[in-house]
Length: 623
Image (cartoon, rainbow, N blue to C red):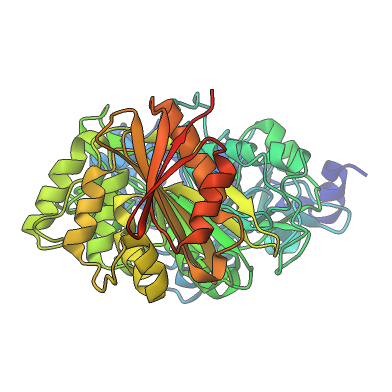
């Protein structure tokens, strides 16, 4: 039995045309509209067309259809739009003051309806055709639509066969709908595709480095978070617990990257509230048991999010200040988007076992004229996310790790990933604010993307994995802590005397000479619970002879005799050759037989000469 015959048989009195249904809306009513791509376009247009309807307060999450009317003065005299999130289509209207914005966490919006903080007289929604039991589906718009429907006095539903049937909380029986309007039309298409640029590619590259296999992901609203998905193809057994399903996720399902097998909450299911994308995407989620669409008060509740181990939240921002405050909903006094799901997921990921959050953003705006890493947020900008909620910030210039770090450390981390032309200015302003030491050096004012080729990993015989990368200015405190953790004998072998103090001034001198070409330092890191710790440093520096670099190493005692120094030596030699060095030299204490053995093993042509207790080693590189 097709759905038209079923409706004629079971509830013919409820089936009316749009004009008849809309006629039940009274002037002064508060009307809820279904979200985003699930909005009932035909009902909206019919309501706007009925000029007898006056002074209507409209509440909606993501709005599209109303963009066709917001420049009409007669429309604005009759309808007052209140949006929980400002979509791209409605942004200019928001800038012009033609619509109103309600800042609210997505997890809490359903309770605003349920508790009558926001009263609703009418709900206009779109549903799939009913099944043989009379159940329709909210399809791609469960989010706050479920609560908006349950708490409205009058429910009018557009029944559209283009609306997918999705599993989860989205089922609504025809008995709970007052009027059914049968109207077939394509759903709104979301996220118009734009060609990925180099900035997005580089950000995706850095974000992918942070995401472990088996992680459960949340992907925030916007083109940038969505484009990051293209860089996750080499991951394994990812899961989804997110507000929004988009086209970019489908290849990851088809290529078995997203399997949901390792999830600890609703294992085997991708959990979401919304779906926005193409008609192909809507067909993919239709009757697909791999997806579970649930309401926002569940999906976005931080305590629910935290039940997913290894939950990684990825969202975007408009600007981030040097202390870690994030603005994501306004450009100065102009409201641009909304709080959305960011804060819910940042806090949920922080409570997740092994979870963390990533804020990803381009380093500049307005074609490079303005830095998005700023000394202070713009006047009028809202703090969507506090400095205490931040874990990682990523731009096309790298990764800043902020969680648990001081203002000094945050300033250096963030200046380091700002656009090179703004780094010195950010450091100078930070000095005026007393965020950092007066003698603090600015990060290198160049693009250090080439350092990515110097990153590598080594799996030790005991199974531990060591990550190697170049030393950065933001490593100062970790560098300091590493040296203070060493035994006196290890420090003596490195510095030839019992060095006791590793001061800020001494470490600044170290940064001053590292240019990653003539001078290079590679560090080895191991994961210790939630953090990475230094366990080795290998360096070379130009000697008096320009084609010769002096090399030195320090390895923490519990990692000695595991091949770490040999690995660092080979890595440094490769970099030194790229920078036209012909040989290494080293000065080693005579009793440091282990270091001398490594040099002689790697360089059969090594020339050793002794002067008292010190041995000088000259090691020519082989062609």
